[in-house]
Image (cartoon, rainbow, N blue to C red; front, side):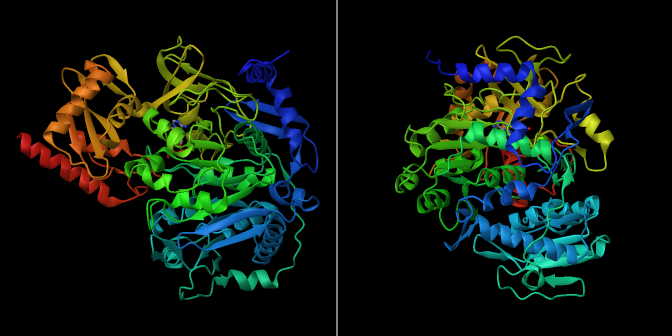
Length: 631
Ligand code: ATP
Ligand code: MG
């Protein structure tokens, strides 16, 4: 009997939800265990403990499992710098480095349960550092290398890290970032730190103090094999602070077994990993996508991955295409914000590269505007590559909503994150937590625990409960606004906190922003609500035009008409501002709360996670100029 498109997925998902414990128990057999679990799930809301009684080690699952197979001498990581240098590490080489560094950390008296902060550039030694921690049962806390000393201090102190691993520098857009100096500035305020390990990356002269040791020296002295520390399933593998799009970053804590099971399965279903794949994930390892789908998932699967250390647009806005072509990437996993940037420069740049090795295209991090989806599909994928729009969060550990090309063909709808992956029970509910009818907007929730679910927030169970489990009884609340259509496809409409309430209607930021971006002259946009006595809120929009297009009153009027026509008169923006850039977090997401504060004259609040302080000044300036112009 032939299987209809999507039927097989439907069958797998149905079976998974009819007995999730059985389903996830089956999935867990893909990992390498020292001791099998006694129970698949212990659920004492809001705390889930997966695979209790099991013992395992994450580095064994990523490395040791391969070195007795022919994956041993296969490329694990192909690294490419912004200057065009490349370096390849095989699984065996990676294994050896991890073992040595693990022993070196032990020599620095790092023990199971200790926290280690990793503040490193995008070099293969960053995953080496993470896996070395995992090997000895230390909990890693990777801090994005673009953060300044205050952000580092906050994160080191929150985790009370014993050791910091860093480098003598990082190269970004042709400039050296002196990471060691940032660490030195942080140390007086970070009393828990006993040692700083410095990797030589940039050849930058650094001063070494009494606590500092060179990476290459301690690794050279260390023994080549380190017996892996077997840890309990819920042992904290890492802490990762979220990117801070909506407020102060939270220390999300992930365990070992459930997290790895979730990653192994989702990578198989979503990316359909094959032995021949060259996986290019453009995320920085400082964020969860880098942790889950650059380090743990591809390595568990024995895939070759490309690690690119540089900006997408330096020296030219062509880097991802150039790197994909050079290394023959088969899967590209990137962000809508990067795609919008490339789109702004037109098609001739990507068209000048041979991208025919690509077979699958993915996105993550923000909703993808249908216009951008089309461009990705046509210009990059030449209409031959499925697009997987993956919705998930730091807190979920792994992908929750996505097409699963590794299970079945699922018809695509541009702008929809499609369906929950098998075993994930997602729904859209109203204010009172009742599931809404198809086509009705509401709040995305997850109604049952899933293996990749965070253990808690580091040192703050109360905040964990309040943030995720108090809004709707017995359900996880991610904080996103969404709707499910008649086919059950999920459409993410923006953050729940950013929803605009205009004359009794609720509008997700995505609905408006995608409408702006669908205008031929607009590359990017962000909308915010300003309190309005009659309407509740009025819509304020900030837009960035494509290369070569100037903002004007005529274009402004055209945009207002365009929104009225495409979304409806209810969505008529009150004000439209042309800006050169939008304020974004360091992970590239638009910080709408800042725009909202500017538009309503409020205080701006925490901006430590802002990518570029100049953007906020620019927005303020545009806002004030227009205000003056209209009197
Ligand atoms: P913070 O929680 O600190 O404010 P953040 O939410 O940006 O930061 P992440 O965990 O990196 O930190 O991002 C998860 C969020 O990103 C989701 O809650 C959602 O709003 C958005 N997101 C991620 N992927 C998608 C997607 N495919 N479609 C729509 N939104 C997405
Ligand atoms: Mg979040």
